[in-house]
Image 1: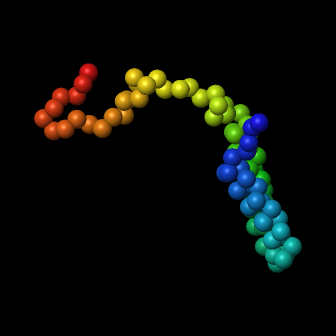
Image 2: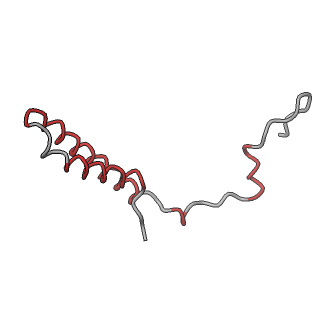
Image 3: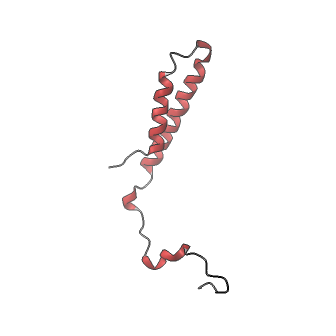
Length: 83
């Protein structure tokens, strides 16, 4: 089962909070609240699409044990790097 990430959930919650703030906002500034609702909804949808379109964690490639040292610490001073 695929899940939507925390980024998308955050923006959906932000959109709901912004939507709740539309009515108590003074009429001349309601466009700001609606803009926040729209931007939060846009980012929530985009992040949801990204999460659903990317391969999930179970299908990631496994790194072989002999290649795990690709990012090993550098050699001590005076020693040569292994080739």
